[in-house]
Length: 572
Image (cartoon, rainbow, N blue to C red; front, top):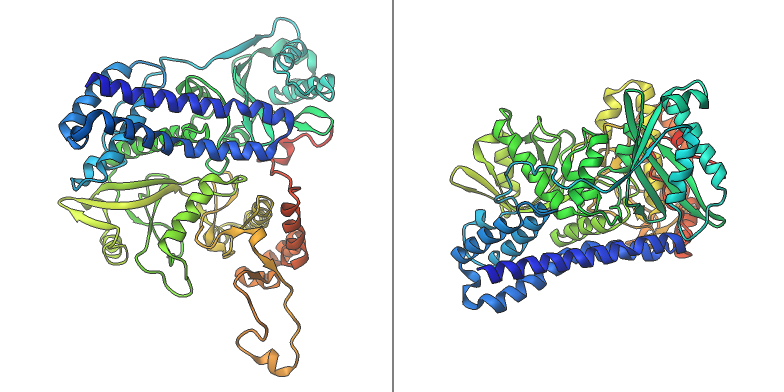
């Protein structure tokens, strides 16, 4: 058993080494402004986990032979494995890798689904913080300017700064503003230190130094965002509010490329700045999606054991493709693909799954919810409201079944809960509703700049996060902007054309008519006027053709990952 456990751990080590090898390319991608290469690296790293699990399982099959299918053999291997890696750095992630190999092996067998559930054996005590993240401490003995200068000197790139003195001035001025000091001299007296993580965080075309600012008896996040321009590197933003940093590390952003060891230390460092941020989201945004999945299940099952509410339909209009339910006391929704889709949906189950996988790999631009996929997951049967249970057994019967006192779901997606935009607009006062509607238009534009066309622009397919950001979450009709043909509506030829119920012109599969977008906005006149004043160009085919051309020429700008425009430096 020790040899098999060792081979299993070798598989994890090889995975982790390859993961770090890919991640370490991020620095040169940033310095060379190779954004296309950065996107390819991200996709390669996402695919690496499944490939590593399959490779490790193949080696174990060769080693164990006919015993590969024996449950007692696997229990013995896991016992040895657990005992050896329980107190090593990233031991929890090593356990997750072991479980993945185990489940991939057993899924091919006709056994009790609980043995191969994605959530089996995940409920255990939180791992203690034994291995903190590497960090630098810049203690302020004299002037804030001195420690800021030293920090920026320590984090130089191969590409030189455009103007180091200007960057130092910018950061120092931000610190004066953050702590509410009267002037630089007051800040020099108040600021105690800046703590920053040793490793630089990369996200496509930007780099981030992540840290905390301490003054008097207070502290806050301090994240410096670097961009590499045509003229060199400059600091684009200094993020200090919990909202800004939470969005940066949020469930709608692409994963960071950061070579941080151990991962758990980095997670807890960030958690100290963002206490409301769930651990699963932090593991995931750092690129450790499988550990994020384990942490999500662990947290949820702990909550479920003590919750006294029941699963109910999630708020919002019922979907034709997905049945969505939630536990009101927990901030997650669960989505199951229905057995049959109603008119006018003409996508298949496999197509829907491909769309979700596409989003998993694509730049989400802060506008697409990250989703965790689970298989063979169990819930207590008595936790379901009767009307929800009836619909589950009726419209998702190919996926859902009862096994004793458990409801077993073969396949589902989980994601953070947001307020459906159509409900939000009805419930909020005009000012908040207007802001959300304008952000809805901006969300469509942000997605377009990442080559995403939502397909279905109905308000019910968008949601509002607790930060007030509008997010898209209905992926079954999502497609690439470059796959669409954006057309103007041809004028009617005569009176008969005007009176036709159907189109008087030919419409191909990929034809999109932006002039018709307004029919998706079931809103009152003042809100509609505000939307058109800001985002009227979304109704012009010419706008969409320009965006498409930007992508075809590889000139589309990246969407800045900053919540407030005020957090961003607008000039060099």
